[in-house]
Structure formats: C-alpha cells, structure tokens
Amino acid sequence: MGQYLSGLRNKYDVESQKNGECHICKKQIEIEELVMCVRCNIKIHSLCEDALRDGRGYCKCPNCNRVGSLGIKIVA
Ligand SMILES: [Zn+2]
Ligand SMILES: [Zn+2]
Image (tube, rainbow, N blue to C red; front, side):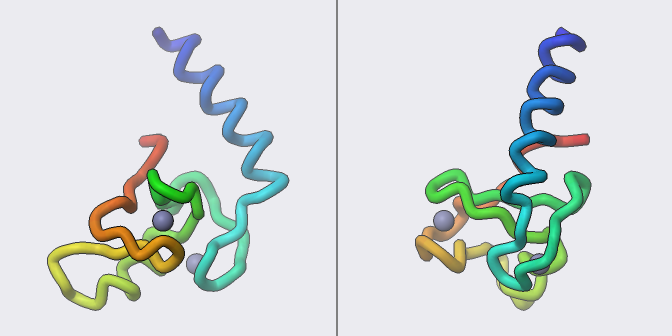
C-alpha cells in the first residue's frame, strides 16, 4: 500500500515538472498547494482557488466552468 502510494507520487512529480503551471497565475505549483479539476485536468494553486471562490460556498473551474469539479488530487 505504501509502495503503491509513493509510486503514484513519483509519477506525478515527473509529470508536474513538465507541466506544473497554475492555470490562473501561470506560476509553478508545489504539490502541497495543488488543486486540480477532475473534468479538464487543469492545475491551480489552492490560494488561487480561494481567490476564485471569493467567499462563495462552491468553487467553479475557470476552464470548463464546472461547479464543484475542483479538488485536491494527492493528499500529501
Ligand atoms: Zn496560481
Ligand atoms: Zn475544469
């Protein structure tokens, strides 16, 4: 189980080095602050998601406009 999880983590890390850019601010995203859309797979910072949400009770993807599709893919 632990091995399986760390395998996933390593795979993600390789991928994130190629394409770990925030959809909103275009800066590099560290894994601790990553939020992803399950629909279109964009990556954004959890802080950028906070700003986007702007106090509303739900979040909406800035790319596909789906409500509630944003989530943290990997919990560190
Ligand atoms: Zn950002
Ligand atoms: Zn989306």
